[in-house]
Image (cartoon, rainbow, N blue to C red; front, side, top):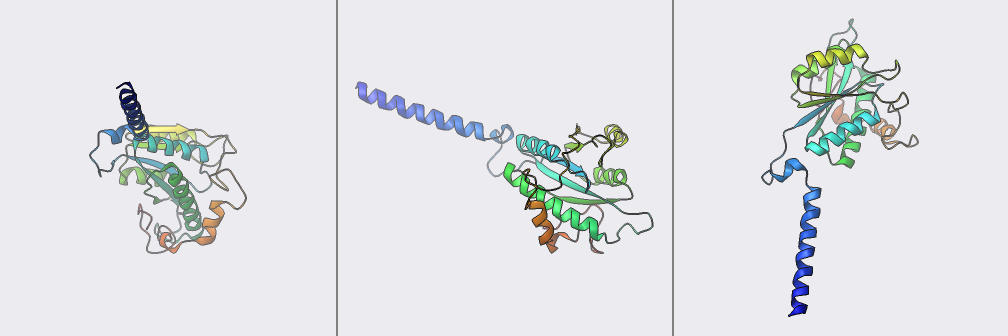
Length: 220
């Protein structure tokens, strides 16, 4: 009788431990959600070609994972005033392809869904304003320019705080945090470099040619 009782106690302890592990691995928003239902929360992550911060991206991905939200990276493309707004932008198109590929690769490591966008504008603030007006989101994560570098300066951040709805998270990364190699910290043979070499045609419609549209999602 004592042996049977010990066996029952061990089985119960193992079952409770398994339930505890499963509970920890499930996000708080998933615990009360019916099976198969996908979260509709979205976190916008606007960035420009020369100022994609690895730390800011990781912060956005951690928030997205905690909220079971979709990350919406928005590449802000600047169109010179002397060109029509829908003009092909081959250099920025190449940069957008490479960076969005790198973001998707990093997001996969965090198990976060991605819905990438390319947004045109005459200035980066104009493109940011258009993205805010056209996209649905619950939170914005943005990296302020560090030490006068590329990116969003204090005026852009102040404008965002005054005009954007929802929650806003502003990070100021170190000056050497700009993504110019790999999202994994290895600047040799990086994912970003290989993405540039591949140049997948399915994404070039974003800003590379006449088929592009302001605020259009990146083709998949």
